[in-house]
Image 1: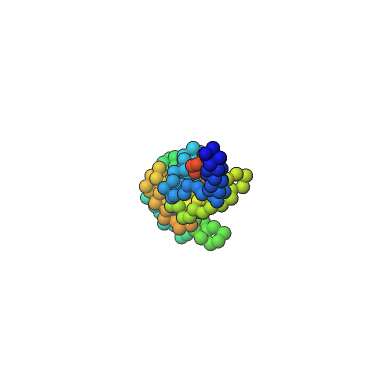
Image 2: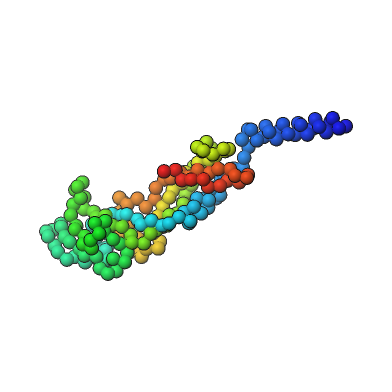
Length: 193
């Protein structure tokens, strides 16, 4: 009887080893992956958003009283000064407070600006989850392809519309996050650069 228990124990151990070796692991769903990635973003510092303002956005900025025209040079070129309200929300890359509205080197009329407030990132819309070997990690791994977006909802509606109104502004980009299996559960490992 004792030999039979030993054989059954050995057989169970062999099945367990086979089960582990074949990579049987819990599945990672979209609903599980997004909160793991978002928890990483919630712990990180926000980042100012660099965006471009086109002609429609320039008019909207005047209407919202973020800047006012100070000098009209010709039918297309002008200078605009940031208002006190505008200075609370945006800054110019050159450190000045005057927008020199001219054509950029590509011939387009657009001007680069930066939000004063750092904006948090949001993980949205999982596109794909696939098995992958994660460098430097023992055990199974997965890559989650998702959309990363700046959360502009903290900005005033007028500024949100200026940012979203220019198709050249990239508010969301496709990213990849690495996940690892730790103690039987999926955990966030890193965001691929």
